[in-house]
Image (cartoon, rainbow, N blue to C red):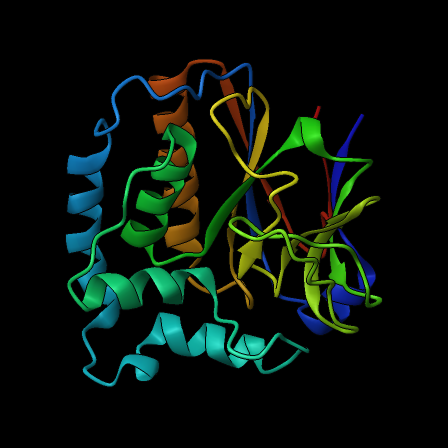
Amino acid sequence: MKRFVMEPAFLDLFPESRIGVVVCTGIDNHVKDEERFAPWLRECEKLSAVYTANPEFTENEVVRSWRDAFYRFKTKKGARCSIEALLKRVSKGGQIGCINPLVDIYNGISLKYGLPAGGENIDAFEGDIRLTLAEGGEAFITYGSDKGEPALPGEVIYKDDAGAICRCWNWRESVRTMLTEDVTNAILVLETSRGEFADRLDAALAELADKIQTELGGSAAIFIADKAHPEIELI
């Protein structure tokens, strides 16, 4: 049995954090139509404008809340929260490209609800997946690179027994556990740093799970991890 665990070191720093988790099993993530989710992504991009209404980009509530969170731990220079990166691209007139169904779905949900989202291949984990503070030196190679970029001491990371899975909380994901077309069992996460945006988190989880089951088959179970419930059994 593999678990998702919010470790004490992380919870000491972010005691009010709530992490929405969707555990997907038996799904078919193969691309059958490269543009299948493009129209829906365009809709989500339009809806995301509500989160960038302030012309001073960094003063928008979603961006500011995650900037404040990132100031509280060691980060790689220039690292930004994943939702900030998406909102910045869309607010400047860019579009989110299609990658594969799971990634397209969580990108759309992230934009629609203004929440960071990510996902990993459960079957690629070595041991449990843990949200914690890095000891420093945890192995990490991100997509598009063959260069090792180990985690920094005190950095918020997702990790397993083999190294970092996602660096700077939700900045970059490891190629080792990334969601490819061949994935059949996956964990998707929607994140808050202070338990903020609770209504949006609940609605986002419900839509994420429903869309995955409708589009990809299998099952998608919803969980919330927080200080009172820091562990979730995966598969």
